[in-house]
Picture 1 (spheres, one colour):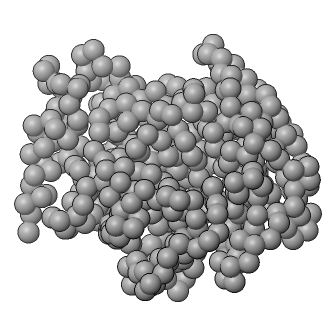
Picture 2 (spheres, rainbow, N blue to C red):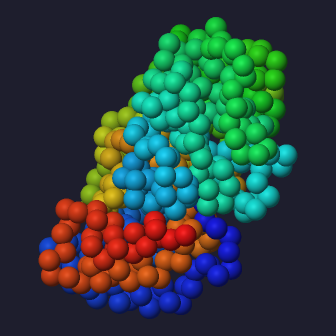
Length: 428
């Protein structure tokens, strides 16, 4: 769901600031003001998040700070209400189950020229229906259906357009390809390979290489160019591997291992050989508001181009930020919720966009997109509505002012808001 690059639709931040000041003065009954405004980010308005935890004790030698904020979310309810803006297809299938997702920056031969340099394409695997729902270009969503994809577990899209999947039987599938015209095609008579794999991770995708996790808890390098498999040499070898993330700019691997109770960072000393740099099993942090975090294990990690690591605690529903020496500098807990947007609960997987370093978090049937504003303070954001939002924002503001505002209903089910959306649905 990428925004249309139309000058007429660019954000007017002066007007937004005025609107924001007005919104902060609203009386929303029994609804906490900070808990009422997650939807604002979806419309391009940012608010301070009361749940940001930072004790201010930053290692000056490292000079790392972190300020993660949720910016947008994709879930079945959002797609049901807003999907028509991006599909123009009344027969577009519902999004039922987000099994997995992949973000990719395509190489120039297949990348849409209208996309901004930092934009990515998002692919969502709906394994319950056998669908891949994906962004085609700016402001456009398409889908691909194949019944054989039902119950597939994972998806990973390479910059070349090759789509890798893991079947319900645990075998690597390379039958699908994203093309230069924005379609997905399947190689005729193609079936799953005989390569057994539990998980796969981005590695050197420009070379067609990914990392495979095998059933024996080892990591291998797989080349999609020639189907070769080689050892990924790590010293010392991790065990109980939960997640892996690679930074191409740092030639560095971040691994959650020991069944999630440890984070290890490895530097590449030569091609395919990595040496341990540092590791930690300490996930305790006390915030300035007095709340203490102590993750029992880390469910997923993502390392950015500077070596900063973002780690998920799906027990605490939190994102930990670690500096390059694995010192915790901040913890973000998403306490905001306003239907159809959901609080970040039980986050399973975190991935990072290669250019703008936005964070993509997979949870219970949602993908949340967040940004660390201390890493990327730019106001331009890929995910917003491809319409003039003024009337829609005003309808939401008017709804919030009503004394009978129903907090149990979705924003898009409020009468005034629903009426605005209906005008877009029926527009020629």
